[in-house]
Length: 303
Image 1 (tube, helix red, strand yellow):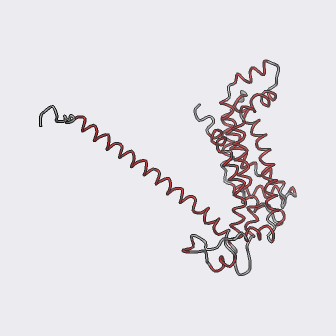
Image 2 (image 1 turned 90 degrees about the horizontal axis):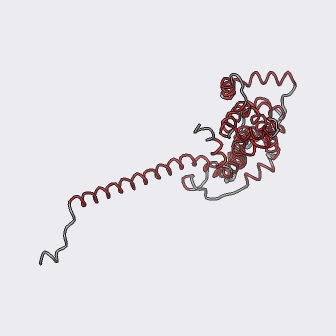
Image 3 (image 1 turned 180 degrees about the horizontal axis):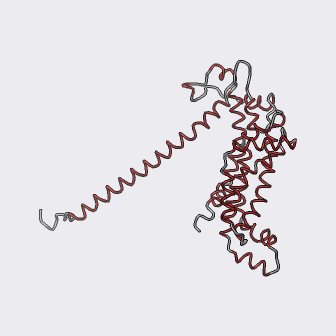
């Protein structure tokens, strides 16, 4: 064999670079696989309680009483929607759902309206001590809820407003107003002031500029504030259990406590069916508005 017919071997440096490139690709692939495995594990841990609630809600009363749900209790051998029918037909769960919808809806409307005005004032007007005011608002929002139950109970009792869903609308503002005001204030600070200045030059007042110029631009932030306010009011239990006594006035989270109770057995399938029912509106809101929620929550983060 002549030297012309023999294929030349690649240089040593090229072979070393090739090996390093292969090792680097192998490490990148291993890290990516490890990342996705970790994500899957975290998702399984986070979603398993929700799966278990859904699984239990689809069992019959006999299966719940006997502890029968299928092999190892993970996959039910038989699924039934009887618990959902009993929740509405026998337990009258539609009334608490309507109460929760009224309270959460009106609380959301009031919160967005007041928080928009307060957030705009803190973002635009030359208010002395605006930072201290915002800090006080946030402090009130993070104050322990149970510490406020006693004073609010005494106030509502003296005013004769106990055992009614309407005072809850005002009480829930303790939850919703601080975080909504903070979010909208940050969002308004991102909007260029030149937009309002142009409207003011054309003869508009501050409120007109807010309504016609600023609000249309701030829709993502207001949408986020509305969704968070609705979720907080919809899921409340502490205030409802403290101020309501009559079952027909109960909100949905409070009504769940009395579902499925009997002298000899607790029907967890009915309780979990009610939990699934009150979770659906919140889940749908988050799924359909997740982009607006993210844009609203990140407002002001790059200032």
